[in-house]
Length: 112
Image 1 (cartoon, rainbow, N blue to C red):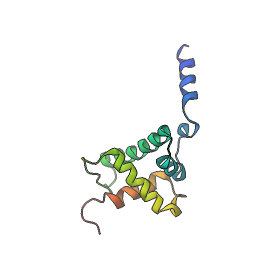
Image 2: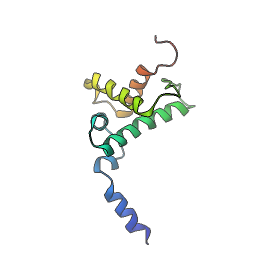
Image 3: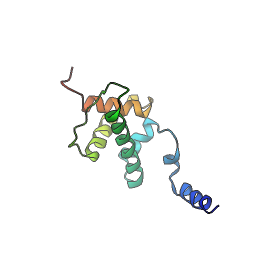
């Protein structure tokens, strides 16, 4: 029974937008551009999760190849810049746009 109060406190400590199951592209873009360190860190973590899933996927063909020496902050900034340039597309799912941004920025092999 002691775990319940602790879990309740932890849940209350999370920002409301971070507790959601899905992230909209608009929220992701706002998070990447935010001055709030916690919100920015959450958005960067989302981008890096997409990178990790894409890099370790054996089910799907890899559509992006982020170099091993790439810095996490630089990858998130590149995605944020791509989202800014494609603001008209922010109605699409966040994971789709992050994958497209990574494909455009870190295409596997020579660009077509």
